[in-house]
Image (cartoon, rainbow, N blue to C red):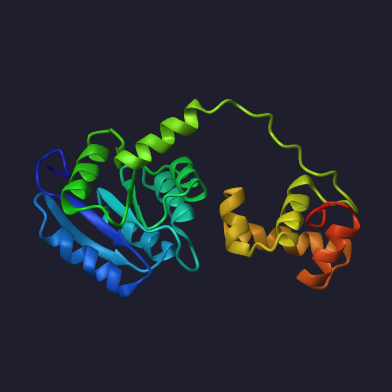
Length: 227
């Protein structure tokens, strides 16, 4: 397996916010044939910076990290550095983790119980232009594609000059989601969520999330459980 047209190992960047996990992955990759670990990052912002500096062929990307999560980092890397492929390596295989990562441009998706051989196969696959997916992830994608299409849910009616997206954010706040969870659900960055929150708070005259929850229920945007 080569990373460059002229030969040589695949240059891999490892991204994980947990130091012990990150160092363990680096150690494992160092034992695998055809792979050279060129760097390691502890969050998405650092990952994007290291891709610019080191030009890896493949990034092994964790998803849930502080500051900049794996989905946003994947989106930035694939937009700015299309020659670098991304393989997600995460604990989570749920739909809310899988599909945003694929939409952001990840070409591979593995869970952290993957063995060395499976990681090598995924790296080889994405470098050859194919998808590097574990069998379980492949099945989930096929199941999702075979599901009948549903009518898209219409967002609640805007109120007090709120945009449809601001209403969506308000409803998710009322449902108890934190900013990072809202960002993952809407496939936007945490900074974008904060901007929407600031805007809707200003328009509706709200001071905090507790007032936002009461406002959402008072406007009928959210129904009490069992209602």
